[in-house]
Image 1 (tube, rainbow, N blue to C red):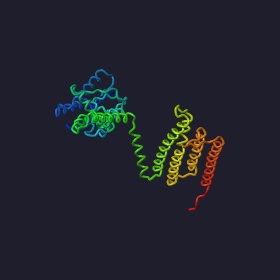
Image 2 (image 1 turned 120 degrees about the vertical axis):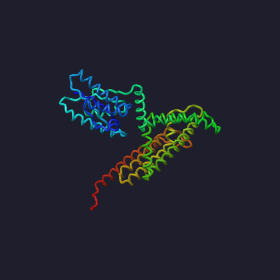
Image 3 (image 1 turned 90 degrees about the horizontal axis):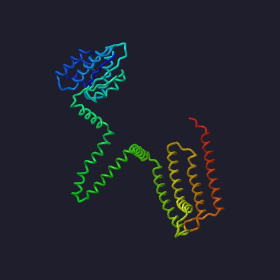
Image 4 (image 1 turned 45 degrees about the vertical axis):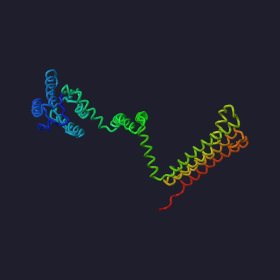
Length: 374
């Protein structure tokens, strides 16, 4: 069975004529169309109703299936409520025609706005086709208006389109204002161009979510009073100092080994590591102690966490001795002989192994300790 379904999403039929909806049957739909045309001849829903009757007559004359026509309406002012009301009226129409055959619909609308209810209709019965009928002179205008309305209603799309457009429209008044204050207009254009470029990159790379999450985490850290905030800042400062110290060590070694020739890659890396590793180790110990403190205050402390600063010291000692082995004994450099290097490597390894075993035993004894009786 074919059902020609005329859709009036904003309920012009009910509001202007007082007719009860849904309207089912050819004669009833025709009377409703005449009544609406009498009240408001310019309403485009008049065309929808008459088109529905026309399609019904054409299908009835050419198809072997039973054909019915009905008009359903929504409500004015709320798309969600309108869609729900259309769905309810479609259910009532299906119950009233009560066909044993599968009912398929041909939907008649007057524009893009009414077609937004199609998912609601498809959830109740198959849709074989959609016929849009509007005044030809107004078809493109209505579709454009509805599209612009939907775009401006979406916060994300609104920000993407209107913000760059607003900045572009501000170019001329800002240049005029800059000329009044003897500021070069080229400077204003450069600043605006830079802002537009940064905004385009920001939106194109999708960085807004990452920036928002980072700001939220930073805000939580500030309000929670975490020690890691301070220790991370101190660790960053120590890393900067380490980088400067590594560069100064590199320049000192270069002036000693090859003042006029380029320095080999190996000694250059060794010089940078030798100068910076002590500060990097201090940064690692500082940040790990801050993390351990926060875990203890949060009640999540484990003895294995104490391995972190010990490992940092062990690794730093090994790197310091290994880099010193490849460097001469000059100002700011502690040169290591082969025996000294072997001693430091052994000590670093033993320190890491002993700390791992010690804190593992402490952790196991803590877990095996019986709970205090209540």
